Image 1 (cartoon, rainbow, N blue to C red):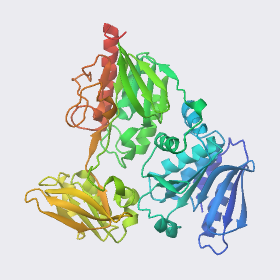
Image 2 (image 1 turned 45 degrees about the horizontal axis):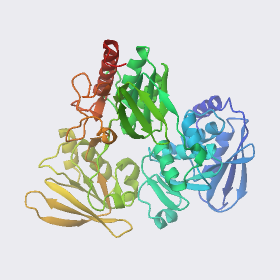
Image 3 (image 1 turned 135 degrees about the vertical axis):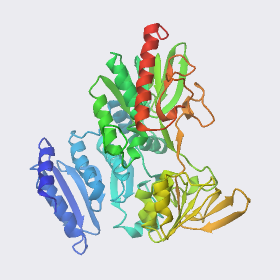
Image 4 (image 1 turned 60 degrees about the vertical axis):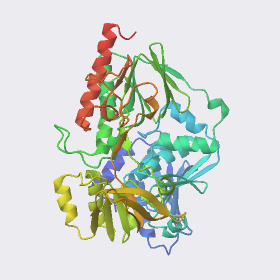
Length: 517
């Protein structure tokens, strides 16, 4: 099943395994996908003397990963092919302590402190690029906390369950039967949700205080650039971020990063991490900023979990995130008809009618993508004309199942308490409102600056961007902003990298001039 070149790679990957691992398989002899699962797992097992499998008759299609005969807490219900093949490999490597996505000590302690028992189930699509991040994060939690159990379920093989649970978006995470998360998610975000639901041991509440010359908040292109430039000046630097790579991780293809003809967002995120690790930069990933205070010249940044970072120089590079409509019904139906990723959730709407909100590049690209799956796609643009590049406009207008309305304000998402049933739209010129029956809504209205937690400390404009001068300085000495979170025009990766460098150099200059102690 696996190609020989891939098997050779697996032999090298598994060469350092220390424990014995077993795929404990339970599968019905009548199950049509039985052979595919067994062939896949046998091929993987053949790549290492430390991996074996045992098969027993049962219902469905599932296997548990055992370590030295003991349950790791990781279960796959389905065939971990496609993007989830990496999740299978990382489950083995992380269980052996050899994986690259085991979090740092602080996050490990928070996971270990979660109160259990906790049974997590994640429904995925093998075509979803966001699903593996969630699956791998929850698998890590199962490895680090014996009270946690996590199973991945291929929704395509368990359609009855998908319908019963009214799942319309992936990944969908259930904790003891209750839906707690839908869509892209990072380990820190998922951990925070589990802490709120289950709590953690009281002795784990105290957070550590860290002192640095420079603290960079955000791990995208701007943050990575700022950290590298600061480290090159010989300063003690920390990067505090929800995820290394930031928003860029969601970009499928990148073809305008000069000197790099073609790459992907996920690969660029890896490259940013690799470059930062070439310097003595401390990476604190999976941290959400809770508060920022300025005491004399010290900036105190507190994150979820209680850790505090103290520094004279704070560089804010938190980027931007997808805007929401903020209309009645939107929040209620996220994951039940309201979606943000056409690549991940589009297959749920095969043969159905969906709306795309937004006529910029992302909206029209989504409409083109969905037109190949859905029976009908209706695009609503707020302005009087589409904003997308001309080449995209020409392409979408040639698609027979795409209808476009401009000057249209989305007013309300309509549902039946279980899923989306329609949308209410107002003509901005006539004020006429109408309700359109449909099955799903994809929101593609651009990005908003991630500046909320900083607004009480620094000045922002109407759009929420942090106001800076041409050197990335804010009005507060020792606080700088770079990239998409700032007022710099043209939100591009290469510009963010340059702005991160400017912010770091400005902070160093202020240090030399005595502005910072």
